[in-house]
Image 1 (spheres, rainbow, N blue to C red):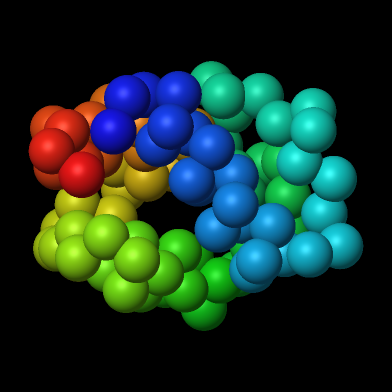
Image 2 (image 1 turned 60 degrees about the vertical axis):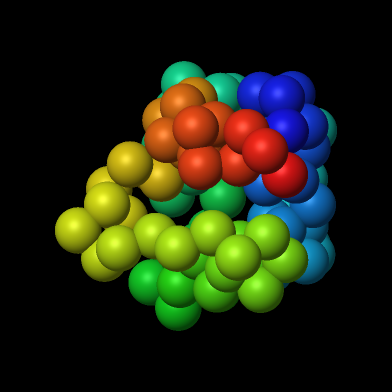
Length: 83
């Protein structure tokens, strides 16, 4: 997947997890939690959804890499390159 495709996939996952949030103005460099209401369970849902959809394993110690769209795409790009 390209970085743009990964971003689109994350937006899709976020829209499923937080359907009432307006994601159109999401700033890629800002923390997700600073922009939309996500609790720790929502965050785990993102990780689980990535595992379910793409079989991407994200160790708990790497969860901090998924704080913003920029960091998430950067982290996932090598893991999802061949998807």
